Length: 192
Image (cartoon, rainbow, N blue to C red; front, side, top):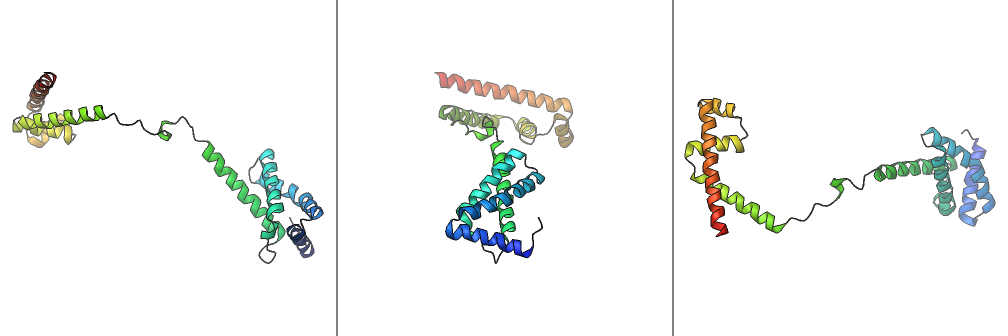
């Protein structure tokens, strides 16, 4: 929008009239001049016609309510109003992005409270497994640790230890049988 220096001063004076006197005719003149230009600008920036009109209405309400914040020594009337329009458009886009969150998204819901009984059962089970692991022969405990705590495959354990693959598998199978017996024995004691 090209304005002469005189027009720039004229529109600044109109805003000052709105600020100082709540001059409705000055406001109407500002509205008639800037509303279509602001709408065009907002549509060029990607707003649809409806959104652009809403933003323009918001800008003009801001002009009416906050005209006293306009400082002609810092910017022209058009710069001030277009900056308000730009900022309102950005605010609207941010709100839309926030509104796009799906309220049913499980990550937005708090996790269920921990069931204390289940938590205690899990801790007791973990303790039983640790104790049962301690009762295993060293060669079985070592391959179980490599397989389940270090995350190695049976082949990797065989390569690392120099044991045949069948021996690694056999030791893990024997260790599981002993662990199962130890845990089942503890369960039988707990039931009694």
